[in-house]
Length: 389
Image (cartoon, rainbow, N blue to C red; front, side, top):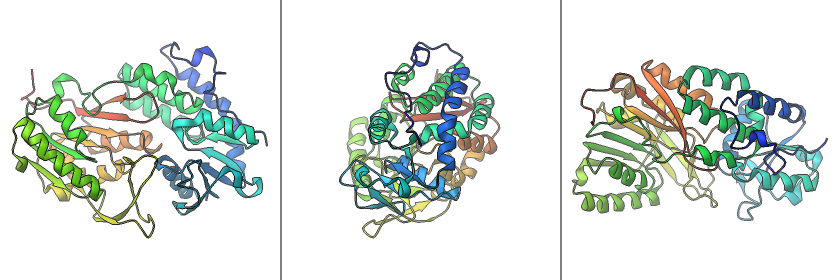
């Protein structure tokens, strides 16, 4: 089987670079067709393995397992990970690759696809990026989402650029569409003078700090959720500092040392030493992982009004929406929901929000020059009357 070189290297034709025409869908279809042979080879392989066992790799493994395709192993270049187990799979060095045991390799370390592709080509290992594998298989569904939810021209451009980057492995053109104000890229008419803000995935308070800057320190209430104990302690300390800076009472910020999901429970923390801010919650994270509580937002908020809900929760965004269904249908807050953790989220989350309320309108924005930090913004057409000028 011939090794597959996902373009994204210098061999990409000029038509796929940042000066491409506004209507990129024909380019997307051509790239998907180009990937189809490799896609078919991956689907027909007796064995599949994954290269990169970070959060994207773990989600890819779970997605394949849901399709009754059990990956043989993870490969990773990080010696801290080699010899461990992730998502129930052994993590190996590429030196351990055996064609009969490990078969076709899907690259899940999406931030370094061209580098890893060259590494695999040098070893004669057949491969494709997981992103290209997923998009090529589900292109009709991606087109349906594009047509139904992303009528705004800029959103459609962002969507198309992202799909091209996924199919080619070349993220360089994303720099041209990167937007500032991550989580706050709403139209001016959707802003309220005093928001009731839910920060799901609050980390150490960095988003709260940005929220206060964007709203000149004015708000009614903030509810912040962070599951990792050490990070939660930093969050609590930083809220004290922010209160002193902006002159608000700390009682106006409710802190929850918990994750958010569809139902109450306890999950483990799957830490990634290469990305310390990306601690995903999983059912089984190993003996050394401490359990953390997970709560539905509807239960935690107890019916409280919400005007703005942000969620960046490492792949639990869809579960969060299910656990916040009553809050969203009742109060119809603005939503800023991260889409980049799971490929399925590009397909499932817009539909899930639309099902909760048909009044939502969508904007898609991307906030880095890599395939990380894509945010779906949703706001209702009839915002409350007390808008900021």
